[in-house]
Amino acid sequence: MYGGQAVIEGVMIRGRDHFGLAVRREDGSIELHHEPLSSFYNGRPRRWPLVRGFLTLLETMLLGIKALQLSANMAAMDRDPDAEEGIPAWVMATTLGIALFFGVGLFFITPLMIAWALNPV
Image (tube, rainbow, N blue to C red; front, top):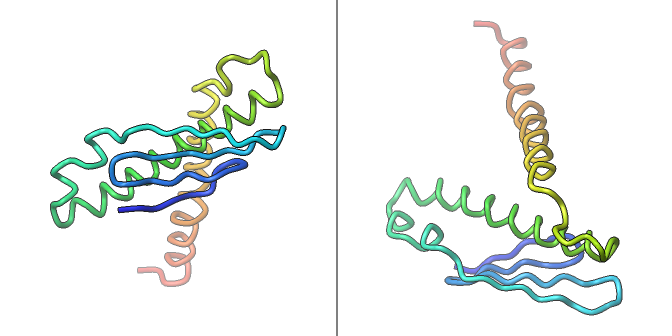
């Protein structure tokens, strides 16, 4: 299973056992990062019908967030070379929480409320 995703100033590619990240730095060089995937991404439950769809969605979201966080940290280090960590975890968690709140509200709750208003039971 192979796939990819755009990240900040780069691209993430997922292979069967590893994922790689390539990010263009401000000086024009390309920084590469690769890691092996944990057994969560390749374990036995990935072969079970009905479960694998949910796991694929979950793993895509988790790996995508991790790749975006890595690329954001690389971009932050370009702007402030003295920064050793990059973006703090609490900032990323808060941003993700707000985004999920508005995403679910805008694309799930709002259409549901409109449908109920147009067709009361």
